[in-house]
Image (cartoon, rainbow, N blue to C red; front, side, top):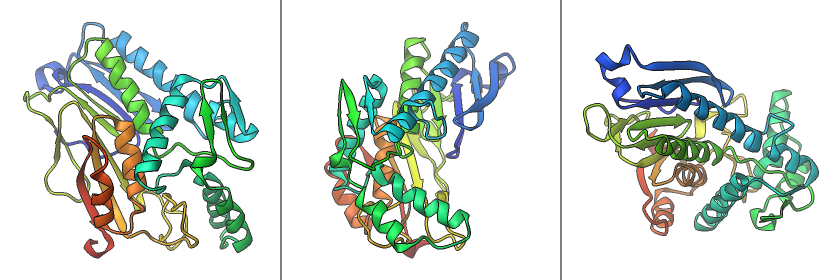
Length: 305
């Protein structure tokens, strides 16, 4: 089986993918993370497990969504402080801090003000004003954010986006839920992939990476892919949605696409996001030497595309 990287959730037990079993498997289709969602599961308690997974996704959206004004992240961005933050937000921020450090600042969730300036300008058909860009860049700096069990506090004017890690984090949480429910063989895709156990052929899961002829094989491991052209902000298609936190200019990065695997989908997600902004492949390799159990599965630079 090959599964492309998508922005929807797919929870598929290994048994359910075998043809004789697929016909009797429980199937749910709906919306998750703003896109089409699907759960196909062959298990005596499939409907109950699927309901728990859907509830967990909804609960985590209320933590991480930038589009729900009632989410914890939206309230933090609006008020600059969030008292008694949920454990999930703190855990995600701890992983973000680790990746911010190992990528030497390339992964920085405080780029949200810069993203807003660029997105609003190009949506209006104009170039962003230099003074607006300068003010937005001055707000960037993950090291200025403080968080502990009692509160998350942003520096004045800062806003966060966790889009480069939250999808992976949600995949990790769903994987944990599946294990607790006794589902050992399952492929989870929340935009990032977590593969537990084995596929129907009793071998590791084979997951496709766009543009690569051979799939990546995973067992009890996660995969995340980030690409410059995944979403573009300008009409010319030169400025992608992954923004460099330290650059004084907005330009196309040298790395067009990178896929990272790791034991944790949140870790793989954040690493692929940050390292998509590396100067070259050599910098990616140097950073990854300092990340235990994570590895590069695929990398493509401008010269290869």
